[in-house]
Image (tube, rainbow, N blue to C red; front, top):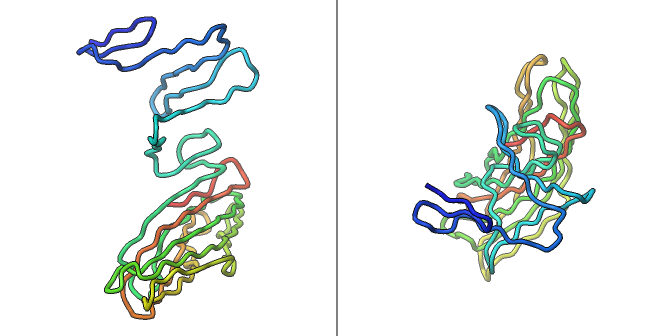
Length: 222
């Protein structure tokens, strides 16, 4: 059984679980709130100051690890997001073949959103990692209740390639699939990539996709 004391808490083997470090004349603190079914527990900065940041400090070269599939910045749980960031890997992409790297979902309601897409691509066949290409695109979409979403993708905003001496090269182009779903239901469409190598072979991409919703709820990517 764990034990709690003024300086922290220990487990059943008397190993440290939590340490409380005191600051003289403190007015701010953290509050941990539990939750009912369907809601997340919450760790909050609370106290006497009007605006209080929350600081997480790893030790040495340690990192802060977030295990969720996306980062939600508006404070609402689940798929209703003002801003969502997704990092996704797709492997074994056939040469010169449009391949889905992410799916965008738009509920049947009034929605407006912009997506920023940054993709790194490399060959993974016989000439693995001889070239790495980066490309960036934007997608804009609008939807009204009872109508299908309309989405458009920009031209290439920026790109570059790094190739070892005498290495195989590749080009990467993003497009959008057709919209799927009825006018009275959720719509989906895919972000597609076509990687074409100077020598035909499979490739791999890592995509960083940011969704910015006009409303506090709505468009998601997975």
